[in-house]
Image 1: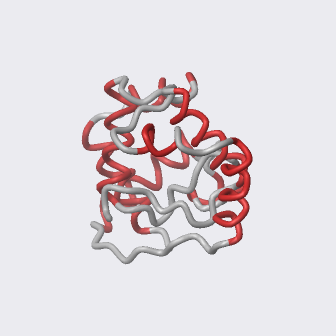
Image 2 (image 1 turned 30 degrees about the vertical axis):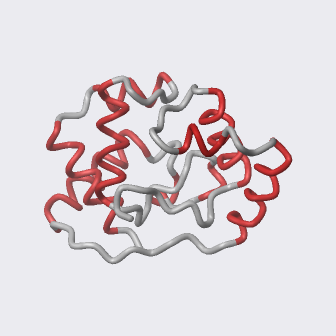
Length: 146
């Protein structure tokens, strides 16, 4: 649903690292921490291989063109170095942002800003500097990507 990410098309490395982080508790989640504990590293690798072969999901969502444009500018300034191709490149091992559900994107950014979700220092610093309006614009930008 809209509060969950699409994992189709994720790089194997990103998938495995994320599952290990859930399992260890380094990445917070109400549900995934419990689920991740039920699998071995070998099973993570098998799942990662399957999901990496799937095409990334394309979600049709209503977005505001002005917010999309503002989000594009913010992405270009702050995010493009690690989230190539407008957040659509799985090979950058930073997760796929393009066409993710808007509620999931917003929750993730808000969790990062509040400290609930850890991210690399350089990303956290940039997210912490975002206003609520900036976050909304980024959400519209990534949600608009097909």
